[in-house]
Image (cartoon, rainbow, N blue to C red):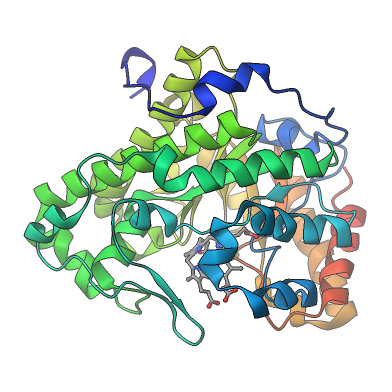
Length: 384
Ligand SMILES: Cc1c2[nH]c(c1CCC(=O)O)Cc1[nH]c(c(CCC(=O)O)c1C)Cc1[nH]c(c(CCC(=O)O)c1C)Cc1[nH]c(c(C)c1CCC(=O)O)C2
């Protein structure tokens, strides 16, 4: 399964010429990178998915004057939004570049809108395999997504070594789901019926998406990202068979291509987190236990899983991230403290590399002081 033997084509990225000449501010807090490599750190590094988001008044202020994708596509704005939570909360141990997973369908040629009440909308979804012809056959990731790389370089400088910068992309299956559904879904009838009706074409589509994801991640690292995360937000909608047959090979294509191309370029290896939201620990997660073969060093867990139980299943080779219930942030000061304390004990008992995070993104109505209190509690109760 290891991708080290396969030679991948090196994408045409500006960073290939420039990455060796970049000098970066010295990193002062490397807890995140150590935990991702499997170290048991003195306390858990902590960050929060969607930490640059609508619960922050300073985010809302910028969003008032700019559309969502304008924020993603303007490097100075994306940089400013990424730095907002870092400036406000010195207890955060990581930053994640402000962007969206749906920039990959855009790079493939699909229109994506962000509607205030509905979330993402893709007005012309893929209905049958003949619609795949509407996608660009080769994607010039530098041309389509160069703004992400620019934003990353600016942000890494702006961070001045305070914390590492995470780059990310969506997982092929999750992106295919958006591309076939035309937006979010409750039942995933359109995207999952592709897997039953058109299994061969589904695999080919997933591979094409995976290629763009890999090139995006490679460009992010060359531009200055110090760690990567792949968001498979809809992994839990699949049967274990579908996860293994469709989602997993595409995920492995991404991680193997990223690591192999970086090695070909002589770039130091970096760690990758996979967030396969909703997957069953005893079936799908079990397939992801060995970073040496999967290329995923850390697995992000949602709040439905118990860290001790997961450790028993996946063993000690892989690091883990998670998994406080995002709704705990509405639990009040005492509620937050007692839950963080309880869950942290499970994590310490589980052992191994642990990055503290929510089990999914922070939601817009959270009070900024409750987010701050949550971070304080994690610092206190994750101490080993
Ligand atoms: C599925 C998914 C998307 N985007 C993303 C995922 C994977 C994680 C997950 O499962 O939530 C990933 C994402 N989206 C965003 C980030 C930025 C980095 C971070 O702080 O985590 C990241 C990592 C910004 C964003 N992406 C989005 C916002 C809010 C949009 C706004 O400002 O109007 C932000 C800050 C919009 C978005 N983008 C997406 C949705 C479903 C929505 C709508 C959500 C909603 O309306 O509540 C697609």
